[in-house]
Amino acid sequence: MSKQLATTIPDEVVMSKIYMVRDQKVMVDRDLAELYGVATKVLKQAVRRNMARFPEDFMFEMDKEEFENWRSQNVTSREDRQGLRYMPFCFTEQGVTMLSCILNSKRAIHVNIQIIRIYTRIREMLLAHKDVFLRVEQVEKQMIKHDEKIELLFTYLSKFIEKEETPRTQIGYRAKKEG
Image (cartoon, rainbow, N blue to C red; front, side, top):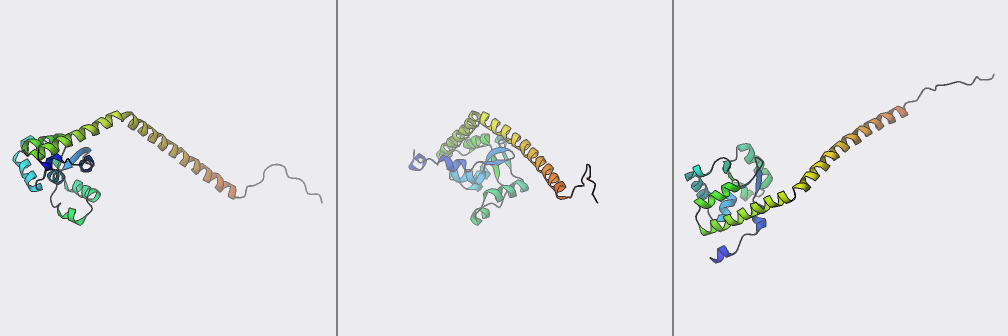
């Protein structure tokens, strides 16, 4: 194995390139091309030549609205923006796996194995902490209910305070004035 392949890409770098688009964890073409050491154009050409391998649940192209939203949230430097003239391809975990079949370099295979292992760890972490996520969700729902009740309480208190500020008419017996 060459020296270049022996040095693995830090998991944090790979994980920072996983985005949520259409409620799916995806990686975009330019990030994958960078990791594989090929030009984005080359990666896209290889995918277009092999479109039968990439059904919608493996790979899709961002629409204009998704692209603008993703770009505003994730791309900050001017240099990065200039490299994004076209809607990127988004690859799901299965799509990333399929890329290793069409990009047959040693580096692509090595990086793909690393990416798949990261996806697997993410899935395992989510499953292991599923009960924590469910409990957090329950607490959030309770907090919303409490917020509504507190808001109602403040509404009643403000009405009560308004009534206190207006003079009240006295009721009951009046003492006769002696005169």
